[in-house]
Length: 207
Image (tube, rainbow, N blue to C red; front, side, top):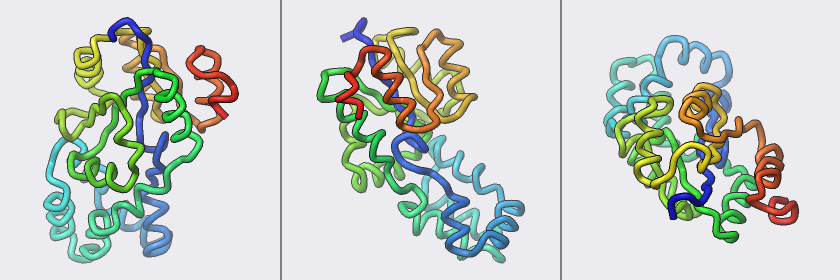
C-alpha cells in the first residue's frame, strides 16, 4: 500500500551482469572488439531498443549498414543472453529476502520490451517484482525524470518511500533530485549492508 517503504532495483549490473564488451572480447578478441565499438555506435543501437524499438529488426538493420561487421553485430541479437549474464547471486537473494519479508519490490530498468520478456524466461526471479517498470514498454529511459514519475504514479509512492539502487551515477542523481533514498550499487555486499541499516532486512536475511 502507498506509504509503505519499497525497494526499487535496477537490473543490469545489479541483478544480472551486462558487459557487452566482455562478450565480444571472448567472441572476436579485444583488438577487433575495440575497432568495432569505435566504428559502430552499438550502445546507441541498444538504447534505441531500450526506448521501444523492435529488437531483432533494430540489430539486423544496424548490421546491414556495416557489412564489415555484419555477422558480429548480429550476435547482439542471436547471442544476447550470453551478453546478459550471469545473474549476480547475492543480489538475487536480497531481492527474494525482501519479498519473503513482505517488502514491496519494484524494478526500474532500461530494457527492451522483447529482451525483458526473453530475460524473464531465462531468469525466473525477474517475475518476482511487484511491478517492473521497463523502459521499452514505457518508451522512455533513465535518466529521464518522466520514467521516475511513472514509478511514483504507478505505485502511489513518492520521495523517501523509495530506496532505489542503480549502478549508474546519472540515474541515481535524478532519483536524489526527486527526493528518493538511493544506494549507488557497487556490489551486493554494499547493498546488503544498506538494506540492514535501513531496517528492511536482518543481517541473517541479507547474508
